[in-house]
Length: 559
Image (cartoon, rainbow, N blue to C red; front, side):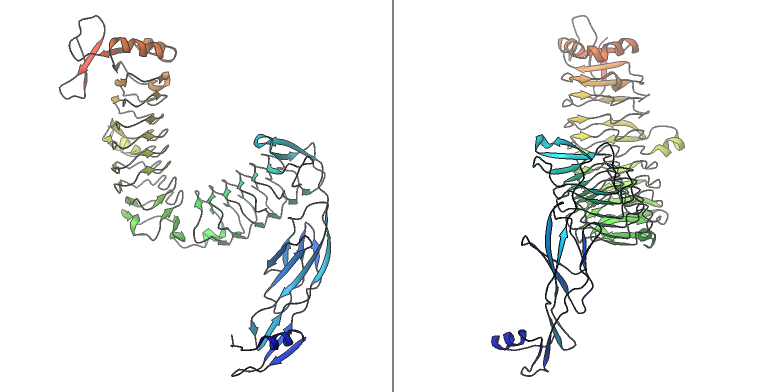
């Protein structure tokens, strides 16, 4: 841009003229020209304000009579923020700006239009939610129009903040005006409709599972919310996707099988991404094989690795890995995982060639299904500071080695820092011995179908066991804490358990049996299980007692 030095009086005199020239010291004269006013200003079906493009305009200012002003670079503005049933005067002005070809373009005059917003229908069912402070809306007995106008407020003045699950699915709706106080859209709320556009209010916080799935004419969506659940827009006609900065999470396959989705824009700080968010889209198919990044997030590794690849994640330019980033990848045999990278769920799900995993010592959490179905995985170096293992994290670990070797091989020793193990974390895992953390406080059905485990010692802090060792067909004995409060029959169902050693006196053992009488007594009698009370010295009274062998680990009944 050329530098222009002028006095305030000169500038004012220029602006008062339709066009003028100013000779400024050291520069060519600069021409000032008013822009033409926008023409053909109309409100298209469904409250989209449009006008003809004004040559040389850098944007447009739209003013509503209530004093609110809006700016846009496009020749359209969504008017859904205006209340149904009201009349508004709206003015549109073309905005000038920078010098172009020796001219400086000034703002145009305004063009006014009267907007009559349509009345909402009364064909809805309203349900009080949030402690009676707002409403959820769903379809009434029938929907008679393909244009759905949802009011922002109920007639009693309370806002409509939620659209119910299955509210308007398969209703033949081609257009919808959302409540402007809307916070959530329930699962399948608009699935299988004829919608072409969905412009969400900025108040929206979440779109739930399958909400707009199979809306096969849906091409345009705007103002996406904070959370988008799995398959929300699967099988739609979306062509371009702009993810706003406020979006924090996009669920599994949220935009999968969108046959027209060729362009995706994601902010510098991407949201957490579920598995295969953009699977089977033109955008994904156009990506070359290898690592696909969004900023410092690794979205996916497309294709397989070269056989026996060893991967050190700390060498990648990332701080986060999306869910399922290496889902079903072959060729990867060893991986190193640093603490500074945030792992999503399912990251190495079904990586069948993975043999070894090394964690940095300060990794504290292994997410859900991280190594689910890694059927050749036998060596895991658990981090020293690990506190929690998510559900199904090592489901099926080493299963192929069982087929190949025919016997148990892996001794599982968990760090003392571990306090929680999720459900089915080691289900079907190829392990023969389990050494649990003494600080463990939560142990769900974590070791089901571990057929090679022969014995187990439950830490003292565990208060409840429910299905934990179901179908561990090789299990023969267990040491349980005296303060165990809940023990379901399914905990040891389909095992060969014959001996239960209680870490308590005979009186405490009787109390323990009485506490679990409803769930365990019949099971104990049916399986002919002997329950032993602890006695450090040879007992003098009658009953079944046990003590530790010289190794301090193995229980031995007193004869």
